[in-house]
Image (cartoon, rainbow, N blue to C red; front, side, top):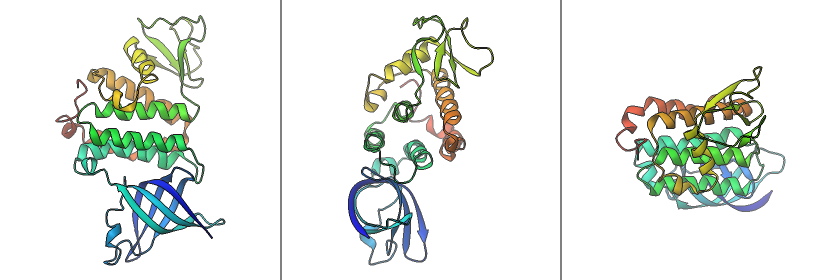
Length: 263
């Protein structure tokens, strides 16, 4: 076994036996791994009591080359994202990017840019009080870019028209934009309004924190969500069922008090 050190974010935590935990974490150097933390729930292990989902840590662990489960040697908590934990709406939103990474990323496939994107997303949700759903939408859009499947929105696949005053069609299979006249009739498409097209293009130019400052209507937000979720589910089979989205939908009335689409 080799001792390795890395920055990590806890994506999921579950009890193991009477005193231990098994964590699914995303590390900067080694990608997604499963980690046994022995004694994490015992009195002697109380210094690890905050080691739960969303914790950002510095980790020393025993890496076992032929196994999928590794063992923690030392875990130092750097940020537990207390503001997210103390707000049910923020927590529900934060679980969306965590579940996407948990389900879509192959074990031990490192992607430091994805780690940085996830960390930036959690920091923005921790610090901001409004525009929180736009932060998550920005994560989803930038995640599609990192995986190489982000749709191209620079112009119609047929005539090359780039105008955004009118609605276009997003050809889901090809990930390309088409004006209504050029849309392939045999392929499934999503309607993309001029406002939605402007919004998605703008996400390419701004940070996650800046995305939280954009004001959009509730109807535009729903349109963007439909586009992002439909596209992710089509191209990434592991994301066909996202429990965090169902939780968020069930909490919508409660979220209206702090996360209105107009702010």
